[in-house]
Image: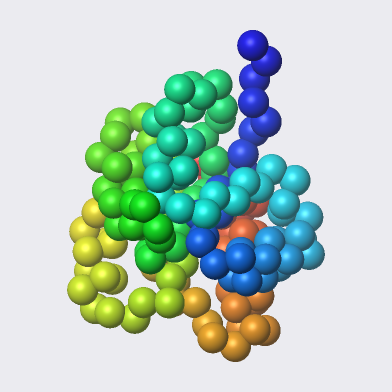
Length: 141
């Protein structure tokens, strides 16, 4: 069986609107060639731990929403950071939650960065652009 396409950025976001904004911001800097979008936490776990997981490269970064259907982002983060094979994959929590308990729990589980989604369109696009540029291009694995 042929290898699956490499994934540089994995976007796990259930909101079509937020996902489209994020992808548009990344596309502006040519960072969508190897972007995969998943819309729930169960799909993210399947991506990393399912039958085809060994055939795909690990993403350079995961942009993970906190409030996801099926399996929430915190549980996805817990699974990624507790597994030796995925522990080193950078995870950026990209969420609307400003709750101190969510922030503390995410860092306790090993999140690499916690970004509260700006409500204003231009600010959201700028935040995603900066995330993509840093994690996909500048950060050394």
